[in-house]
Amino acid sequence: MKIAFLGTGRMGTELALHLLADHEVVAWNRTVERTQRLVEAGARTTETAQEAVDGAELVITALFGPDAVRETVIQPGLIDEGVPWLDTTTVSPADAEEFASVVPTYIAAPVVGTLGPARAGKLGVYVGTPDEELRALGLRIAAPWADPERLRGVDSAAKAAAAKLLANLALAVSAEGLREALDLGEACGIDPAETLDLLGSTGLAFIAGMKGPFVRGERDTAGGDFTVDAIAKDARLMLATSERDLPAVRAALGSLEGQQEAGRGEHDFSAILRPDARG
Image (cartoon, rainbow, N blue to C red; front, side):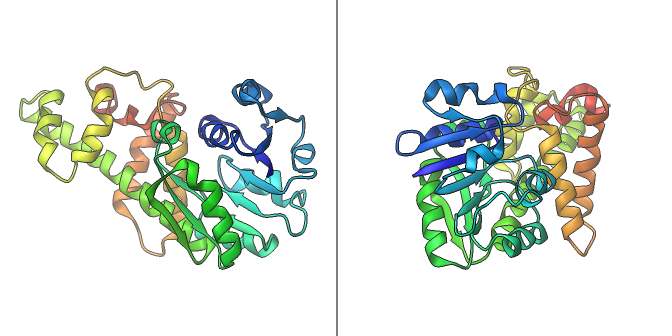
């Protein structure tokens, strides 16, 4: 297929690279330098999003959030009638319903995971639309990105968007739990490395294993896998979506906003686990 791929940030680039073996990919990004890896791998690039979608059989978006989707796609009426649109952007269920009402071929396909799983084709992906043919198309396109056991089709775009928020809620709340576990361990005279080890048989084992290298100082949070800005944006979507308060999410967002205020919005969100971030 001729695919227009809009949004080639860190995650978008990894997704688009998986498509080059089987498809003709035309890439666009607001910052043109971010298309360079794709061009070197065989993609074409354009100066405008409109040029990218001209003649495309499928449009894929991997943008920062719902406002970017509106600005890039909805407001200019970018998607031609009948052209499938696969959106990997993290949005709220209400956003997904809005986009599907404007573009009937909208397929929500948010991805769950960071850059390592993206490169390995081991992401979780939820593919949501009530149209069975479009859903089947979305599942085929997303297959190179996904762990087969974590590739799921669901019957609405809103449900796919909700599933992504649920996944990132678990991530944000677990990270806040690890932050507080490190504080408690320190108060008990246990150093962070040993606290991580002691958490190995608990419900925090997954996040402790994932973010352990950052806590132990083996990796710098600069240029990390999933930024503070990105998960903070997702936490705000969760709070705006829920009719009830989400105090654990709110606590996590407070820690993330502290890092944003410190100028570390582009750092990996494990920045909230830094000793100086924990007081």
